[in-house]
Image (cartoon, rainbow, N blue to C red; front, side, top):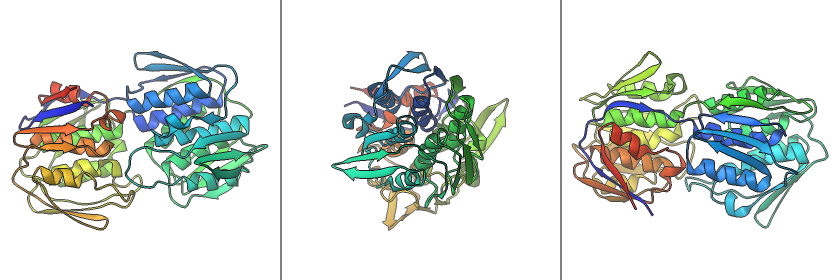
Length: 416
């Protein structure tokens, strides 16, 4: 396995270009199953999860051509109604194929999904929604099988504003008969991007980005070209990277309007953040202030930025409090930060972070995607050398992050 080695203490300066959003790309890749026409995606990030999803789609019957960061999707012959276990087990987002397959074929079979070990993340919200649309659901021997003669639009209220369930049900509903209304829907920018792609193909989706999404079913969809939005979590991670090193960086191809809750918290610590000519300027503060952070569904503070901001608070005077309300296992990075000298006390779903004067480099192990980023951020400011193992998690969500950081002045390298 690869490792990342960091020698801390370098102030980051310069420009960094943000890649396309992983969490927006994955459902859009899957949505190409809804049409026989050609679909082109632009600004696609080069990530392990993107490649895995392409493998899933090829196994189902899609033809995918790649050129730089652009991909062309087209149905190749008859689609299969099943996603193979050996691929699905590696990535939770594979369950998104159920909506399009159910809509087009009337049947879908998928293994219970895998992915990061940050919580149970059950798919019962997806399944309840499919039942509302007229599907029969059977769970047997590790697989979920759904069947229907014809999906029919309906009104439903999600128990929780699940991003995956909202996406899955949106995709199924675009080819269902009649009108579907999804209440308590997820409001993330990635939901809006999926809706924009579906509408480009001829779907009739309205209300994306609000609590109520309405889908008027159509008989078929066509093709089209779509540019994926920039990755807001990568943007946020580089904002914290500038802050934790006292740096001064310009972020290109990022969107502040997708990060309002994070920006509010970072500004409260004393960091300067502003927009200039379409770019984001981040200037770290020499005197950071502590925070109280509670993760919430969008537009609240994103759970995907909790670990990174915790790394920043480890070297911030006074005490900070983090409360995690989304995933039950999302403090797994705490033990590794403690190995670097952080003082963190866990109690239930909360973490009390007592700021220390400095962190020390140490051998640490990444436990999930965002924990990987948190350890890199800690390594950037730590005294001495930090060695991060199991960075395959990192490659699921960050495109060549070590290369981008090195261009900003970090002393960082990947070794085999």
